[in-house]
Image (spheres, rainbow, N blue to C red):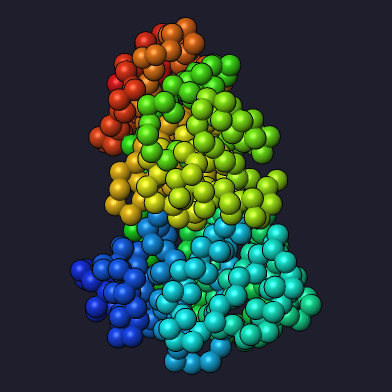
Length: 428
């Protein structure tokens, strides 16, 4: 396929339930048993195409049900024929979550699963592979380790899924993915799911897939629809004080993002000193520590989970009231994935970002990507001098409006004193 050619999109008729998508009756019974009543838009579009055996490129924001978009067709296919389904995921946490989702559908058919991730004992994974699993979920590096030692035979793969493909490329997995694509059979069904569609993903799709059909439920880079957004421009030394005020006025679960592992450790300690239960999750934590932190956050044992971008995607925690970008992400695309942790499964959510005066470029990159101007706020309980008059030399890029998405939280009051001559934000 020509790498410059477009991946065709397809429009399907609307259906209200899982009936009519081509799903086998036994799987429909399982979905009903696990309380899946209606398909999400990406499921509605992707499942019928995948069941037909076509290659699929699925573009959808986080929290939209992408996992079952490939899990259902994969189990249905494997229940009728031989072969192995292989799912590649960028992080350990996402791989574990995917296995849990697939297992719930696969086990009633006697289909075993295995999860191959770094940080977990190789011996346990070798034993799981010896039980002849029909579905293998893996991070790229650990899968290559098993292939190299002949624990996993890639020639058996009949269906391949690349989940969060853009994130895998961002994390430097391109060489490993290329190795895997070279050793799995060319005669396979391939599905690629992603929240964004950069040129590298289009190249991968056209180079390694057979006439893939593109299904998209939102423009690439679209922020979660039910998430309202807010920006504080604050001096670096005042961020901790502002954080304390914000946390005191939210009662639900809070997911807080920092750029660095050291920063995550420091902020978690500071949050605990404020009197809030907090845990941290980043690559310096062991797999068991990360699991404990995430499970404790899900249970409500921790009000605040402090994380680096390792947790920005694929972590399915319902009921997160607030996402705080204590540090803006280095890559604007990660902003979409961070705030997508709230406002999931039909619930409303809110996202607050702290920007320092010198972060004009970072803010503008985010606004261009999400096509929204981030509303700027002060906090009523913090003296105005601890905020700034705007971003250094910043002018709001034209054409990006909030479109009614912003619903200021109770603690938000006022706007920055903005005027054109100051070089700050234009007053809207």
